[in-house]
Image 1 (cartoon, one colour):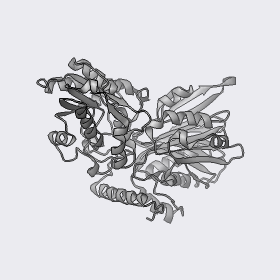
Image 2: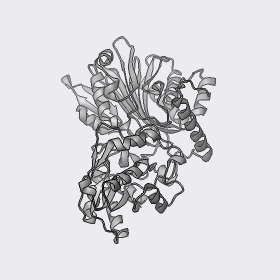
Image 3: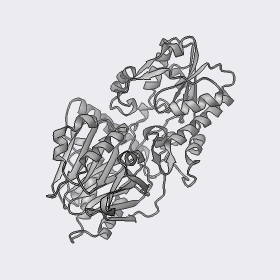
Image 4: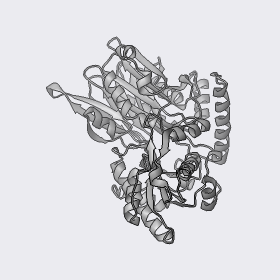
Amino acid sequence: MCGVVGIVGVSSVAQSIYDALIVLQHRGQDAAGIATIDDKNNICLRKANGLVQDVFKTRHMLMLQGNIGVGHVRYPTSGSSSVSDAQPFYVNSPFGITLAHNGNIINIYDLIKTLFETERRHVNTNSDSEILLNVLASELDKFENFPLEPVNIFAAISAMHKKLRGAYSCVALVIGHGMIAFRDPYGIRPLVLGRRLIENNEYEYMVASESVALDTLGFNFLRNISPGEAVYITEKRQLFSCRCADNSKLTPCIFEYVYFARQDSFIDNVSVYSARLRMGKKLGAKISREWQKINIDVVIPVPETSCDIALEIAHIINKPYRQGFVKNRYVGRTFIMPGQQKRRKSVRCKLNANRAEFCEKNVLLIDDSIVRGTTSEQIVELAREAGAKKVYFASAAPEVRFPNVYGIDMPTTNDLIAHGRKVDEICKLIGADGLIFQDLSDLIDAVREENPELKQFECSVFDGIYITKDVDQVYLNNLEKMRKINKLRYKNDINDFNF
């Protein structure tokens, strides 16, 4: 899960992109990057491992000249953390193109083979984003006219959709042309479009992974970029758009609403905050039905994603809501930290139990989800160490039983505590006295209630149904093998990659 942003402005955009990336930092903490095009048509690029505020110093911002640019915060989905995989990526032919990508491409090896044998293009990293960039460059290179017309841009994106498999929300800069933003035919990953009125009745345009980035910079939300749609904004800020994919169908990732997105964002016309409140109502009703004989003294959220959910649950079951955990806000989100050992170590650094809320009480802990079980197990331990008599656990999401291949860092079954296990077994592993999960049907209803036009969601981590219909066990086995290779390679600081 990554965050992308692109701006076409009147004056320098580097500071605005930096500010947007700060807002999107929750989507990725492994690396950050910004690319701009200056008045001499040079790509100015700065990217490195680390948080946004650590990657960009004054000297870096001063060199990022130009009124058009893209930015990226990275969360690795393949187990790698090399700076060579940081985005945006750049190719110099044709024109000079730089691209930032959120999602995951499934058919990367077929694409690499085609790019090398047919297009004579070499991919230098193991990043699917670099592959995607080269596919875009290859398609744009097929047009001889300069500058390219919007119809050429959209024809290239249309050809890309026919080649790519997986999830992708992208923003790219093309020297001498402008900015292109596009979304996969299923709209799995979010992408929004906004504009800001400036002097002389002119507009600046912005695309971003979440609407909250628009809000922060004073851009008005125009709309979501539709599945299969491409938006082209020229250097002179002329906007063109086109639906470039056949049979496109909006099927957003439901995990965005559960965990990834900020609560003040709107994803496909659904308030993330309101969706989480409804998740709490649904789960609270289930707890009331199924746990009537369980004595609960207090409801305590695992901060911060589940706080709104827990508040609704406490209201439904008529129990006090308390902030029992104090969070260290200077530690990153544990779910998106690369490496299991780093996640384990960070939980204790991130959370501390307030003994006054646990001592001699039967507590109900609320979390947004249980994925690997690492965090849940340690949180239960923290509650017991703080003096809790009984520790019950509720998850606002169903059991995560299947690998994700669309951009979430849980691609192998070995990482999933719920895979092949019943609820009682999971409960025992995390050390709780009771465990309850949200029903998938209730989760779907909670999200789509605000936007009934959302007929289907990408729920593969819960139900094992992959909407692109091209994920089989052979692919999942190969993915697991590559994940192990990546971990070994980066553990030994080996940066070369051979296909």
